[in-house]
Length: 296
Image 1: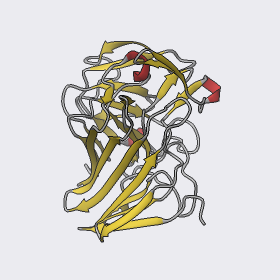
Image 2: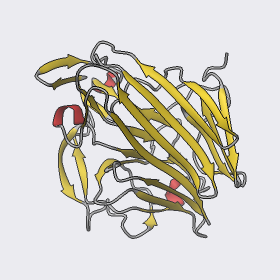
Image 3: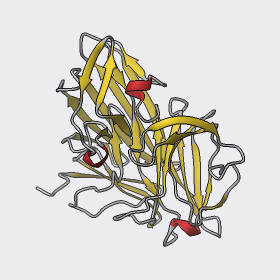
Image 4: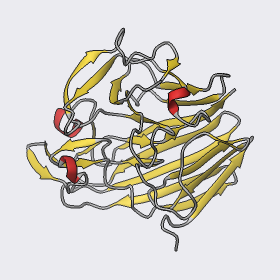
């Protein structure tokens, strides 16, 4: 067995994607042989969140503690350096892959109740490629007999083919950015984006700017990353994806070779703030969609 388990390859219209059993992770995405994401090698373990799904919460929960429906819960601390619970519970789980066709694979995982999250969810992630690129549909079904808190995020690193993202042109529209404390990267408030150094509503070079920032959106996510010639990549999300985490990956192993563009249904620490948190009723299903396409 490889470190990331079985792999599933889908192809169509020049697009090629590889998904791993471990975490239902998007390991590779190319168009006409050009990388659209910074992935990881065959048989290797994903690092830095590359291509992973963040379920049942994205980003950080302060101290791994939260209160829901009048009861307090303690999650395992998965980010010890900052004493936070980070990026959910399914990143390393073994998902079952169902190759539905040469251009589509469906990944399934029954997430059992566990300490800190005593609810069971049936999870499914479908990947499909066609002439418009890669589309990813995520579904969560609460099979518990009580309501469950839920949020979702994805963690691809985009590349426009430049050696460093410093030379790439970034463009996305946002309403506000979430301010964080520098030590634990936990929310302290928000501020409007317009006119600030974090405003990329008009495409501009990233340069040496550093970001590890959650942005609130007024419209469905659309993020473009291009080189000087206009060749690049676009990530989009549906209306349920009201937040984006943009991370310039300033440390190894990525070291600014890719830009993390993370569509999220809720911001960091949503289990405590309640902001845009989905409450899945018993038997209820939730679905969201995002995707990536080549530009130029």
